[in-house]
Length: 492
Image 1 (tube, helix red, strand yellow):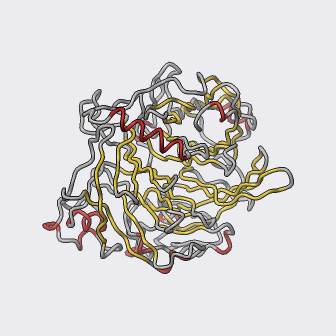
Image 2 (cartoon, helix red, strand yellow; image 1 turned 180 degrees about the horizontal axis):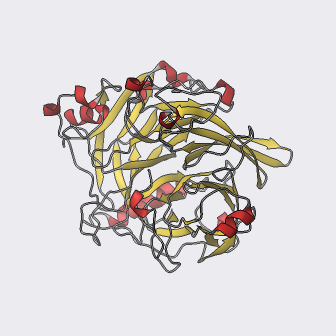
Image 3 (tube, one colour; image 1 turned 45 degrees about the vertical axis):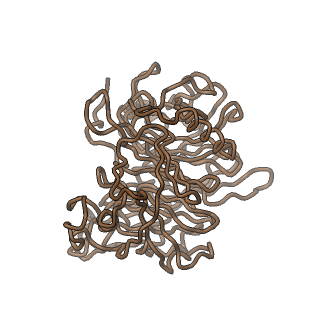
């Protein structure tokens, strides 16, 4: 999910959702090469909207929507330490009544490499050389009440590239490392794991969930019935998604530490089927194959038995050796009504740039039916540009975060939050227009550098349990947003 370095200097539902997706498949069945379109959204055109916290015009939203920002990079946390940068995946892990208001607890990832360690009560790896080489990733926990943020504190440290993850039905957060770096030669530890973060930072174990695989993890979503976890792998060109079946399916904090079985999908009758260039409505029957060595290094997997050379992770190469599918670059995943929605952020063919790397697709995975179906295929940048994190609102609508180039539409350049219609098309719900100069930063009391941040990625979209507030991050300069308004006008 990391933002592209080349962009840094830019200056120029519910059951009803399942039903409408089924209608979409019927309408577009057999349309080879079909892709989605960009349409006018149900919430109307976007307009400049002022941040209630800083008074700055940071994003465009439809009429009637408001937002408040909090916990910018460098802001003091509850413990007095500065807020880490690189805000990324995020999820709501708890909601409880506080008088007439709802208090929400969120855990937020920080996709940081090595540098100053996050001083959380629990830390995985605190070795590896001097301070410049300490694992600087981890998580922070935020609390929001009414229409105000009330606190933020560090909750996990000593990890690397905490990209996305996912909330569990039992009120914890699974944070995922998007790396397979090995710091054992520096006195550190192996990385590339999933960690469970509890609602109380002091009781978070910082223990890697090794059986969930060692790879460039992206996101995870849980089946609330079986307690199986579905995970995505962000390794461009050699990517897949997986299923983790826990030995302990009690669905309580720490249950995944008992281990389990990792699996990958295979198209029935079509070994090593390449799904990197889907058309809208493409449907495949899948079965699951076991990954015997989830913690294996790629070099320990016989290359002759796989079809991915030596570019994949240990789990991926094992999956390929057994005929597993191949995707482009898996990113976000979410669950709704027994189905999982998997984002392949580079699926398709980029018609404008004439290269075999597209702007993204969404696969609907139905474990009960044993199928995966392409319900959205961008086809071109204006429709969606390298979609990344994904969430489902309590009303059943899908919302996507863009992590591509700053799309130039009628509102000018900038990354967007994208909604998906009942017909599988897209619309812009919000647009990033963050451009900060020295005077604005000083007036707002912030500590971020002046810059044009319109190319930066959105991440961590999630709704509160009531569907009243959308939480989302802008990775750089590192800002968390809470957005609310007349959701009932549309499907989000």
